[in-house]
Image 1 (cartoon, rainbow, N blue to C red):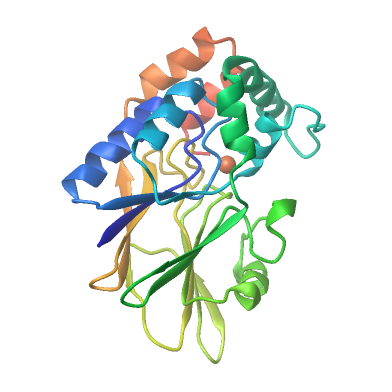
Image 2: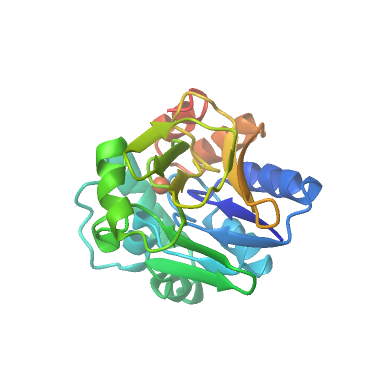
Length: 248
Ligand SMILES: [Fe+2]
């Protein structure tokens, strides 16, 4: 069984389409999404429709999903461009789509026959509804204390990263492929499909091969220019288009 773990899609249709083409090449069997389906970019409806059409095994809620769905929430903690995109997205989606976002869970535990077990969270397991960020091994250590399974996937920072807890310590590193070993815990940030921030402008996602017990990171080029033009055409802040060209 091979899972694709997609996160921080952020209404980027061009990136999502390119990622799904790569996932098909990789013969992915099942999809999960670690949140922030919407926000920032200009195709919230299309991205929700495509994601839901994949019949994913789980989709959990990100902070942008939460704020788009809850019209009464004040946009504390959002930069002005992100807040503008949340308000714009609220005006674009249907009530049925808003309810779908609202109903997404904050975390999900996947348990399958044959010992396949992993967790999903957008930010951090120690308080999933507060949208804390894991930027280093110290904040990862707190999350890992709450991690009950050997493997957990997260996102939110838009920067792929691997945190491994052994009996002695927690390490942080970039990664391309990692094998899940006994007596360790793995917290894997899969990066962002729709707005990477690690200086690499390519879309990011991960796969988990349950037979080999390996997790691999994938980077996929996509049509950034078209996405940028659509952001401008929608009247969204130009900074949101620019940052896609820098990966920040
Ligand atoms: Fe995000």
